[in-house]
Amino acid sequence: MSNSWIDLRSDTVTLPSDEMRRAMASAEVGDDVYGEDPTVNRLEARAAEIFGREAAIFVPTGTMGNQIAIKLHTHPGQEILCEERGHIFNYEMAMLSWFSGCVARPVAAPQGILSWDLLAPKISPASYYVAQTGLIELENTHNMAGGTVTPVAAMEEICQRAHERNLPVHLDGARVFNAAAFLGKPVAEITRSFDTVMFCLSKGLGAPVGSMLVGTKDLIERARSIRKALGGGMRQAGILAAAGLIALEHGPARLHEDHAMARMLAEGVAGIPGIEIDLATVQTNIVIFDVSDTGKSSTEITAALKEQGVLAGTVNPQLIRFVTHLNISKAQCERALSGLRSICGSRVIV
Image 1: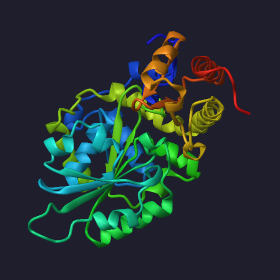
Image 2 (image 1 turned 180 degrees about the vertical axis):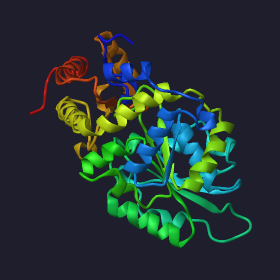
Image 3 (image 1 turned 90 degrees about the vertical axis):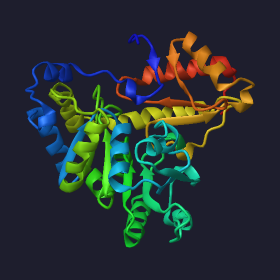
């Protein structure tokens, strides 16, 4: 996609920096399937250190990281409790069924924020004729709830109560550094009670490719076999890991800038007639708003925005999603808002 576009579809569209490109070109590499790629090994060691874990593994995608974790923690025929708008339930091609033989038990949660009170009644009773709960999964930040952040106390309680029942808990932390920035706490602190955590290098942190799964040494050693089964053995992957190291070291410090841009967009959107948005949900870099009362569908509006050089995502016929990232500026956000106003009506509510 040309740099002339204002691309608000996702933070996956970020372009690698010049520093990343230089690091990739000069990366020291080896065969990672044999454990011999020094750059991958450095990335994995650094990720484990930042999260206060024994080990980490580099994977091509967040979906693969999540699916490896599910396979690690479950047995075929079990249920996985997750929020009903969660990524593993809606956007991972039913792989939890295909690969792990499990089914999802979706739980509705206000603003996507699960609590133990919501989860506890959904845990299967001990019985031979119902699928047993094998795993609880959280998503923080929660993508389709608008980038909302689950409070640390809620996560800690869920993990503690689940562990009392011998249930593992996995965190889809694709944007967990955004959650940490919002909470003002290190990622190690807010994720310490989870059995495994997946996070993406290729979203807000700005790397071109890659995600990480962190956990105990034993779990990550087992994860290597599962990664291979999924086709994730990438050989001289240090070329990618070199960019990932830069993203991991430097990306988190600037995420507050993306959050500020998202807030500016959200407040601008809130003033456009026919659009509804809950500003309380705009906590990080995702803005989801309802265009039902504009008389136009989300697809019609995004098509019109595209004609003005602005790319946006649709969630469903009523909802549009903007996502800010390191390649989006304040001026571009203002242009996107101007385009949206012209499409939906020029009168601004003040």
